[in-house]
Length: 380
Image 1 (cartoon, one colour):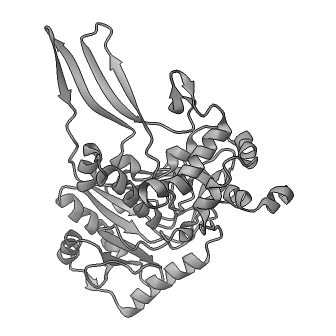
Image 2 (tube, rainbow, N blue to C red):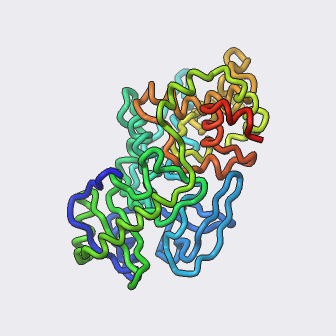
Image 3 (cartoon, rainbow, N blue to C red):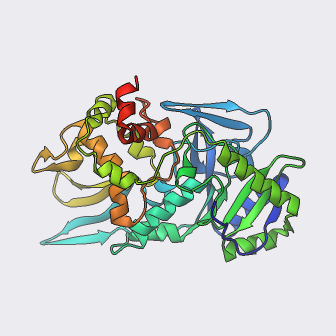
């Protein structure tokens, strides 16, 4: 695992003082957003106190299956990930770009102002941080930075959480993105349940250090630091699913005409679930709406998916006119040509696409079958 980038020795935050952390964030003008239980799933929404968090819950993941159940303890972050990611905080699902209104013989345009409201994002896992870093490179640091994304990103304070367990859909270790956050956070928590309920607090920014100082937190003992390291090691070793990334780009691009694409295409529903829950996918569509009287108009940017037939339409006809071609486009872009464009993989190993695929299509299994022709012949 990569070394953790921190600005100070770690601290200890007693469980009973977690609300004090939230209060300090609110006092600095942040709206706290974190995990909450709603309709049998963990979603991201406004958190007013630690009582709003999924205390005592854990989650079960499998291809095409997700369930919440009660734990036998009061762990605050004893789950992994839900379908939500913090992508929707920065790259919002629907973003108005401008409005226009007729004014006599002129048309007046009103650009949409950027949103600079401060948000504190609680519960980001290592895979989530890697996804944010990936989108930062594309939407904030590229040649054509998105001002809406940049404004929201600059106004965010990130409280990361180290995973204490893995689920059957997780494969973050294949990309080195977890289970313990190593960078990209302001403040990171590792929940310790041995003895008094507490959190090891690691500091990633000057503002986080100020908050820890304001809270009067004590420095973590060597025992607490060792316990946190042990949790990360056990979680990493216990990860069931792996994706062989050795030569992955070259392998995929050499199999563009492989018959297995038709096999997976026959199972894929093109429902767009995988792209909706993926924390790095950033495909969008531009939608124009005019009033019936022609006096006003607005343009919005909305999340879209490469699994949609219309997404590749040119002059009314889709370039990728079957599901197999769309799945191939998604998988090869995510794991191969994304590297050509941005210098890194577009996958962070969070496993959301596996869990929330209604057809139970498993990205890691499909890649393994493409890599190993023998398994294509023998796998039932």
